[in-house]
Length: 482
Image 1 (cartoon, rainbow, N blue to C red):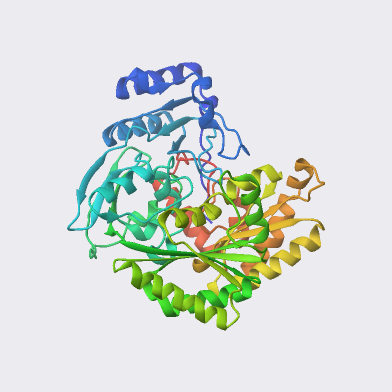
Image 2 (cartoon, rainbow, N blue to C red):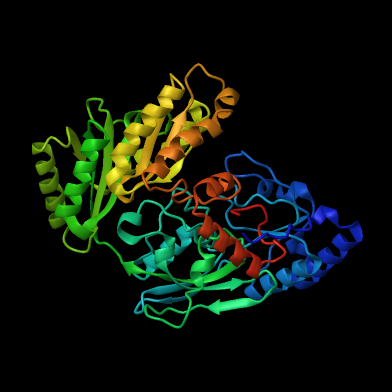
């Protein structure tokens, strides 16, 4: 396997080298955009959930692709590592710096072009996802990527982690929403592949090297993204069922009877819903009785609202007759639909008041989702009686957030000490089912050992060779992924 050269850390160089580099960076992008007092960028040193803190020599804020390239040339020449950061909302430690320079894309926030006829938008890496969604809405179009952090996450980070979200079932992951990119390489060269073509067979599709690479091969500075027709109607329901097996049968029915109008099929078990009811402001149980599990279903389309409502009601009536569901609430107004969505969208935050949780972001073939929930739940509870498993997430694309809340009477620190043991239990089951231990959150620093354990050795070797070719000094986001 290719051996990567260890980076020379910033704190391995002498103060004169640091001063020279920082002066050169100030000349390149302006003194106001080179921040050297750590207290002024303390939040940038910490992972979103506070699980890891890093160190950095400085934070820099280039305002254009040319300035990013200039900064990369300078850091490359000084052999100082660079950690790219967007909104710093990642969940795998991929944005935590390990010395060197933090390069934030905050100022790369322009929407360069909107082409409604070609159904594309050209955006810079620092654009907030919600702002992109709003810009698409202004031209009566849809950019379907949707995440809980969309009000603060940046599209560059979404690209770098190949983000998923709640619309993957119909529109695909971030990778599927991109036609072209612009990226700055570790040595400062600029890859200009900002094309809006649906057909372009001119050699290797290089954008896919950078999408999902978590900033380890270069910095994505802009992208051409796909727009879609804006739905004119949606039908939303929360249905109750006895567990994951009838939920899987229901999913198969919905796919068959609603076809490409099915845009959401999310699973929530009772514990998760109860946490939202208990801790999320304004959320309440929409059903009169308590049930073991629930599915949030949404159809979207461009026809009449009555047609979409009728299609949903017909499918649910058949599901009742087949005993796949035992209760259902259909949103009759936009406010009611939003209230049903809030039960899903608040789930991650609602777990926090319940104490420490061990989180898994996994995927298996959709046909094995019910098997996984049953087997992993039993295996984890066998390991720790009193554990409170909380599986939820994107049932329709096989991606579950298999979160484990600590036993009520257990200390947080003692529970978190079992992280490695639970990882092995859950990820071994995932691997046996042909799944992935990282469905949409990436590898970062948290899952590097898992990558070595489960990834095909030839694939690992090829990844290392690509890294060594583009970044032989291992200066781009060191310590992440590989």
